[in-house]
Image 1 (cartoon, rainbow, N blue to C red):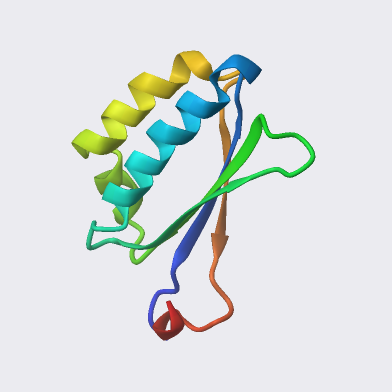
Image 2 (spheres, rainbow, N blue to C red; image 1 turned 180 degrees about the vertical axis):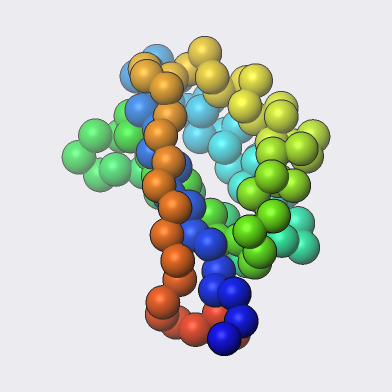
Length: 105
């Protein structure tokens, strides 16, 4: 069986005064990230009940792709730009894709 996609959920809590700036920086990072060969998807979602909370849903094609992503200029710019905007350090959880099958991404 081929390796399944690695799906990472990154949870971010942003200071209220930085929500708009965080969203703009994150969308710029996401638009560049989906062009990387190792990324199948890069979704940005915002909590309806608490707009200071976001989840980035990142689907990687290989186990090495997250490390390659973290070496890109757009990721480093995003990281350095948004870190001071966060109410607390971001957290992440890693998942294995189960459905749809990887060809459906």
